[in-house]
Image (cartoon, rainbow, N blue to C red; front, side):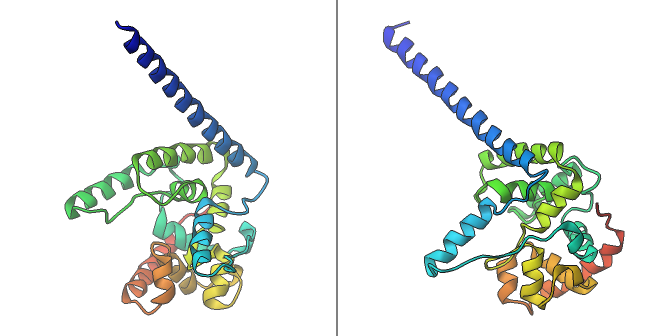
Length: 235
């Protein structure tokens, strides 16, 4: 082997080791945050930061509407509505609903495009807390690793509490309390069954439904979720 080839191989190994070190440090940083959230509430998420940056491009004084409230101050109606609509097996799985992933894969293949995601509440939370909205193999790998961390360190109630306080529910509107006040003028503890089902129906496209509240699809989804709520188990 020539000297040039040996030198090139040495630099490749150094580069790979450096990338591995960065990857490990990044995930240790994430794990530290997840561990801290057993006792402390996250003040913001990566997705919140991205949306605030977007809003401030149009209005430098823009602020997010977000107010953290404890788990017990969020209506059980909303909890059941979200489990019914987003992750019916939330209490049963370890962060991944393999049957749901298979079903979503088959739907997407049939349609020839992405029409279903199959992500669990834990996976959605992992993405919102740390990652960008771009769909790449790297992001999906990181999402899976963070999901494992969340499920390994936090119990289901704590995961759900952070999720309820982090969801986007409109243009600059985040969390159950801000959403309840934005749409209904009252706290999240007082949401009725219908109001909760309607909020849950908005989660898949919140900014659109914020400005298209009379959309018939929203009404249909609300009715379906409300029928399913009685069967939803919550932590």
